[in-house]
Each structure stands twice: as structure tokens, then as C-alpha cells.
Image (cartoon, rainbow, N blue to C red; front, side, top):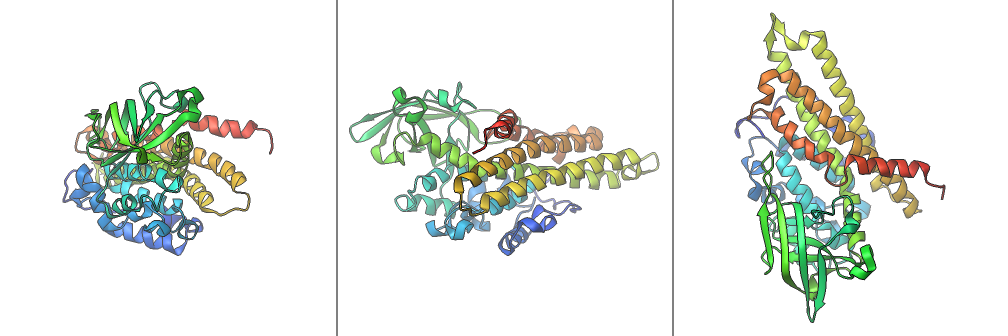
Length: 405
């Protein structure tokens, strides 16, 4: 994202969330945050080149956060039995501050491996999870279709059993990590007569016969593309969990990672605010720095306030997701609303903060090599993926009017 791969990060006026909001974090989170601040820099060229991102994040030690300690990773949630959402969010805020590209690839590394954990297949696929942690395997998550975005139940990709194999036919679009992934977790309906209850998940090798990919051009350089499955034959063992459990695995995975989308938005917004402060403090107009004008200060005040509101929502939601509870279902329902609020507000607020940063930069803010211009293009997809803003509003509104349980 930096104008020069060897340029240092700008001086930061705004502390990272792990430091600014101590009430939500434990010592392990604070140690992780300090490590991220030290290890993640603009000068790290590997964080800006898609094929090198996952191996580099593994070297730094961040891919281990995607796999629980009890499954060979380093995630310490629930005593090492699950992913720690606060740790995931601390990491994504830090990565996105430096490289939204690397953040996106890291997130999909989690999405493309978490269904294995939810299905209870950690032991059976221990080698896959070990490669995820080591950074030698890049994962992808293939759910979205041309006619099945938010309406997952309308999925048309089908799977049929033929002897000791499954045969997959269909198309997936807007799939991240296309071209660099070693496998795709593909969701397909193995029992169309059952409707959404037939949706199942399959671990499909990127080199599987009958699977072809095509890149989709974006306004920013991301490995995004289309997958076509035409008579794609995979072994029976490719099924993750059981037939009909695919929708549960997909939604369960998104439920874990959705909070961290808000954290990534916070990272981008925090970077934009730091850039705006640095720019207006040195840009001289009418005989004095722009930062001395009241309108500039008012704009920065709005940006800082929205940033703090966003991260309070994000890390409250992350904290709630990490809390063990006697009534797990009640806790899950309560956390779902907090997560929806966090994802909705943080991504929308980040869009406004970054837009204001572009305005404060003036003409420079819309030039190709300017950090805030790239942030402006990078933030827009976050309001769409892993549940659009509109879907989050439905979740929140539905919870408010639901009958008491």
C-alpha cells in the first residue's frame, strides 16, 4: 500500500485498539499486539505480493492464530480448544493498517480452514491444518454464486455421489485467493430435494480435474476470481462433516470471522486518520499548516470519534464471542447481535473516515500511489462481504422484535 516499498510507516498518533481499550484484553492479546506493531511494516515487500503473503505471515507467527492449540496451532481461545476472536481481531487490525491485501488473504486463510474445525475433523485432517499453520498451504472459501449471494439457500452448485467419488457441477464467483490457493472449501447441494438441508461442504484440491478458475479484475490488486466446476470428481473423503451440514459449517465459519471484518475496517480507518494528521500537520496553505484551521480540526475530531465508536463495538463483540457461558445458545444469540452491529458500523464508519482523509489530502488524495486513495478503494468491499450492511440490519432488527425466549 505504501508509495514506496522501502518507506517507513507514518508516525502513529492513534494507538492500536489493544493498547487504547485495555478493558477488553488479556496479557496474551497485549503481547500479540506489541509483536504485530514490531513485525508488520510497510517496508515488508512480501505483505504486498499475493503469493508471498501467507508464508510471510506464517514466519511472523500469525497463521497459528487460525488453528487452536489442541489442533496443533497457537490459538488459545477456550483453553486452547478454539480460535480466540480477540486475537484474530488484533491481528487483522494490525495487518490491515499496513496491507489490506495481506489482511484479505489472511482472512480467507481462516475461512478456508475453519470448516474443518467446526466439523470436528481436526485429527483426520491434521496434515492440512499443519500446513495452514506453517504457511505452506493457502486456503479459499467458495460459497458465493452468480445467483446466490446473501440468499445462500438458492445455491445451484450440485454434488452427486458416484461410487467412491463425489462429482461437483456449478459456478462460484467473487472467490478470494483464486490463483494462489491450494484448496477450496466448496459448498454444493448433495440432496437438492432437501433444499438448503442438502448443502454440503467439500475440500477440493485446486488442481482437481474439472475445476477451472478465471481471475476477476478489481479496482485494487487482489487474487479474486471465478471457479467453474464441470464434472469435477473428488474422492468420497473430500466431504467435510456430513451430507447436509454445509450450511451450518458455512454460517458457523462466518459467525466466527465476521467480527474480525470490523477489526480490519478499524485498521484501515486508523491508518487513514494517521495519514490525515501527518499530511495536514505539514501541508502549508495560506501561511500556516492545514491542521491549524478549525475546519480541519473539526474533520479530524469527527474521524477520531467515529473510529473510537467503531472499535468499541468491534472489541465488545470480540470479547463477547470469547466468553464461555453456561447457556451457550443464549450467549450465541446475544453475541450475534453485537457482531452484526460491529460489522455494520465499523465498515460504514471506516468508509466515511477514509473519504474524509481523501478530502483533506486534496488533489493528492486521488492519485494512484497515495495511501489514502488505495484505502478508499480497499475499504469498499468490506461493506459487502461476509454479510452486507443490509443483512446486518436485518439481524439486528430481527433480534429486537423477536419474542423473548
